[in-house]
Image (cartoon, rainbow, N blue to C red; front, side, top):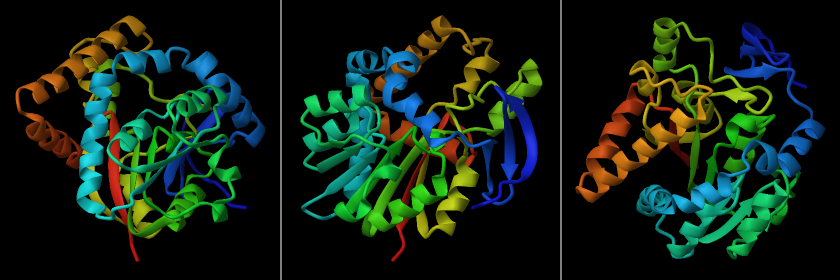
Length: 299
């Protein structure tokens, strides 16, 4: 069993947040038990923590399909197989897989939340209703692509998760990981300028705190080659403008709507390629509220 040790960066909600020297990324201690995670995600996540997630995303689907299409277009440049298979770990209600299926991909989701998995199945998306670590991987096919959105921060053993993803990918298969970009340079500026504590820490829901640098190092160590880095809009810029969305749902909703409106207007104005270049430049600076990393399985 791995021993976790490192400098304590913060204490919150009864957990220590450490810069772990054995893992080479930041995570909380103690690691929540399987039973705690089971209770959190199987029954309560879409009932208590994200009760309006499904209806809200459906109401914004013009925007989200635009975002999904960008990812699928990138994948289609790398995956030339006629029979394209994608696995979405933590697929939630199946929105990304629904769009992937529309574009001709064969899909499979894995999702522990009963509410979300049932919704995905109603969209004709095949779903394994369980945690990824409980699935018998020998019974699964190999995949051209594995997608994980807002999953890595919740997993109790992300190293094992990524190793299993490597094994499930076909030769030159692609993994896409999108997660919160934490301890990033803009967050440090916000802390200093606005005298804010680490507002991005939410243990035990978020166990791990990755950023571009720490995840890139881990992926390379596990046999992946980074092929593309993108980011989402750096929401910290709103904080620096004086729009304090932390703990304020009304302001948070407004800036989310403004960001969506801006990106859709880029598209309407024929500027999607320019927007992507801007966001990729953000990624090169290590900023952006979430990181999006595309990596290829090394042979």
